[in-house]
Image (cartoon, rainbow, N blue to C red; front, side, top):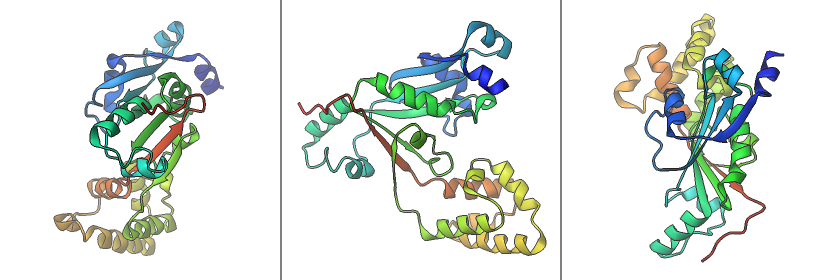
Length: 247
C-alpha cells in the first residue's frame, strides 16, 4: 500500500522554527506559538522528500506552560495549587512542558502521524508532565490516542442539543472539522430534515446578537462550528520514568 510504504520511510528528528513556519498556515490558529522549548519534525528520507516535493511533513512545538489552568488542578489533584505565586511558577516550569502545536501537512493526514509525533516525542522532553489544551479535542482526539488523558469542561446544553440535531440528519462529530463538508451535507438534506436543522441552528445562533440573522451558507456554518468545537479539552501525560521535582 502507498500509505504504508511512505510512513515507513518517515523519521522524527529535532526540528527548528523554520519547520513550524513551513506548516503554520495549515493550523487552525496561525499565530506564533510563543517561546518554544523544543521542536520536532517528521521528515522523509532524502530520496522520498525529493519525490514528494517537501522536506517537512509534520511538526510538534513544545513551550513552557501557562500558570493558571483550572483543569490542571483537577488532573494533578491540586498538586500546584495553594502555593505562593513564585513557588507555584517555579514548580510548574520545572515539571511541565506544553504541547503548543501539532501540524501535519494535509496530504499526509489520516495516517496516524499526529499521534506518532506526540507519542514518540513526549518522553524526549525530560520532564515529568506533558500537557496540552485544544479546542479540537472533540473532533480529533489524537492526543488521547497518543496516551494522554483528557479532562473536559462541561459543554453547554445548547451545544449538546445542536450536536444531537446534526447527528440526527447525518452530520457526526468527526465531520465538524471540515466546514465545507458539513455545508455540503446541509445542502443535500431533503426538505423536512432541512427545515428541522434550520430551526435548531437559528435557535442556537439566537444567543449571538447580529449573528442570529446570518443567512444559511458556508460563512454561517463556519461560525456555528467554531462555537460547537471551541470548548477546550485539557490533556495530560505523566512520564512513568520521572519523579516530580518538588524543590
